[in-house]
Image 1: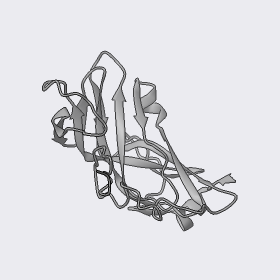
Image 2 (image 1 turned 30 degrees about the vertical axis):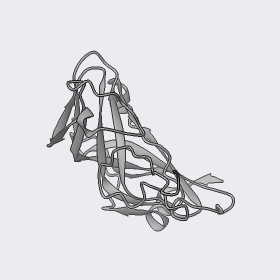
Image 3 (image 1 turned 135 degrees about the vertical axis):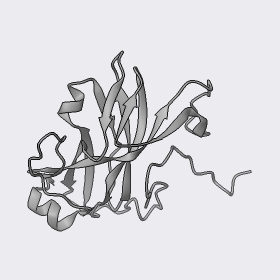
Image 4 (image 1 turned 180 degrees about the horizontal axis):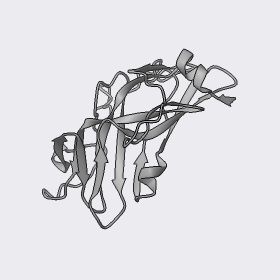
Length: 187
């Protein structure tokens, strides 16, 4: 088992659009790194709101819990969060898993990024959760770096990949809300 290097990421992981990790003045970095890939946050956000006092239920999630926002930045209210999507579409190889961690610049401002692992053969745009843990509003910059994905190759290829099991978030084309697949055979 090992972490993929920049050359391996270029050759083996599907990332579109792909960017080199060059230094860009005045921009939160993005693109390939020595052992990862810094993804950018897109321009579409769903900002959590408690205005409608909806119960948060992951099995019956209500879109009324969010306010849609599109723009070159997003302001996340204090002690709240937003969902967003990556600019990049990712395609993970069958023998690899992607682990996503937030960028240190945001973390040092009390902004935490959460993404569950990108399983073998998962593909699509990544939906990310951005938490503002501070008592002040926090600004997120669209089309700039938000998190790094580290790709780890397994010693053996998995027997069942995310694609094989028909994962519910496979091929998502943008920001996707939580869902639970209902079994049609249950009474």
